[in-house]
Amino acid sequence: MHADHQRAPHHRPSHGHSPDSLSSADEQETTVNRIGTFSAFGIVGLIALTGCTTAETAPADTATTASTSAAPQPVPGEVSGTDPAGGADSDGAQSDGTATGGGDGAGGAAVPACTAADITPALGDITPSDVQTTVPLRYTNSGSVPCNVTGFPGATLQGPDVDGLGPDYDLARSEITPSTTITLEPGAAAVAELTLGTVNKNDERAWIPSAFLTTAPGDTTVMTLPFPASVGVQRQDGATRPASYIGAFSGPVY
Image 1 (cartoon, one colour):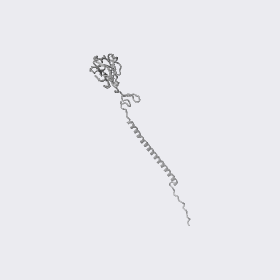
Image 2 (tube, rainbow, N blue to C red):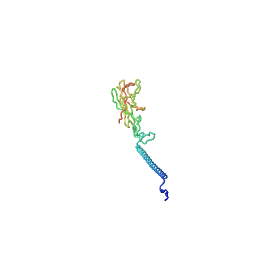
Image 3 (cartoon, rainbow, N blue to C red):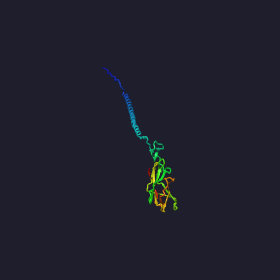
Image 4 (tube, rainbow, N blue to C red):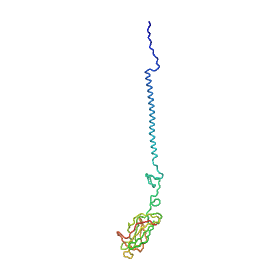
């Protein structure tokens, strides 16, 4: 009778990891992979953000450059905000402009009014009439620079004191000729016409003046001229519409 022999269980040697150790290793590998993945995504995201920042900044620089280049530049010789005749700028600084003109006469200066120092007065030829006689009064610029006459000359006839009226007969001003400003160059003349209500010099109403007194407009210096004794004037001192009067200057004439 044979005795039964029990075989001892045969254990096959294991060359791998135990299930527990395998599970732990897998988890570590998975964790490493995740960290690597997150790191990769982080780097990619950082690059993307950097790229976005660069892309967004570039147009701003471009816009600034475009805005600067589009700004208007001062034109050489042009004066900004000021007077185009080369005055002061609005901030009070002196501009680089040069005055051109800006007034009457040479060099842009205003033309002065003619005075007795500039004028040589003269009475022209008489045009006689039984009712009204006319005599031109001529103002010639005898100076060396232009001057202006405006409106009417002062006009006074001087003669005997008759009937207490006095020796002077101031002539009224006529509005028939419009009042203007006339610039007289040296040698040029302006003319104002005297109109005199006349009568025959032998008439008892005749007043015979011997002198004519005149003043330039705005001046007080009296210039005296001899007056022809052949003219008999009818004085009408204080009359509303006298027959004797002086007209405004016209001209210039040469």
